[in-house]
Image 1 (cartoon, rainbow, N blue to C red):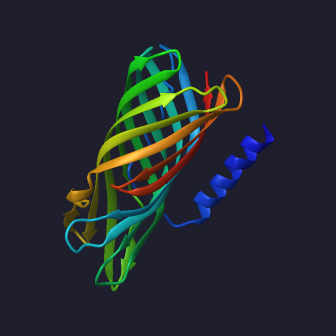
Image 2: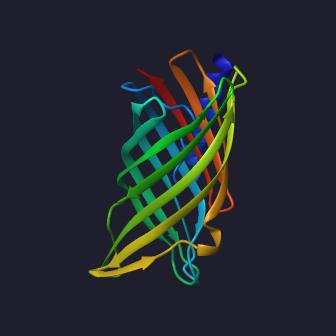
Length: 228
């Protein structure tokens, strides 16, 4: 127990103090019909390349999570919290938008429910709206718009449950200079990605989740979750 808690605290501290968007896939645990999962999650994107010569994005997000089981094999996932955006420009000074409101929604469908192996298809969306900033007598506003489809497979090893999956994702960077709006898409050659993760139980109702994402984005996530 102590080792599990220590591992989570260390992971959380790394998340909070390292500058690091795509959406975490949550894993294959889904609440039974009429039941809830709640939790707290930190999600750090270290690098998401943007199209053409527009540089890249990074950022940190912290959310309260809630999942509700519509059916034993179908859940609705909601989140709300705060997040920031860092636009690393290729040919100009970076833009740092400080943390403000963020949220997301999605669903997961469990299409394999085995004694040891589970498989889930999911859709997730996150939108982050940080504070507007002033620079050179102009107002800069930004929104990150993150969409993801994923299919993941897990295997229960009792002490922990690892999972691996493939995903299709897109993260748009929408920004305004004064009232002029511009949409910059994420690099369309990097829409396909891979994720790996693990659920680590504390007891029958509480567990930690850790996840890392590659290829389309460099990102990590960590959460603590409670079943009701």
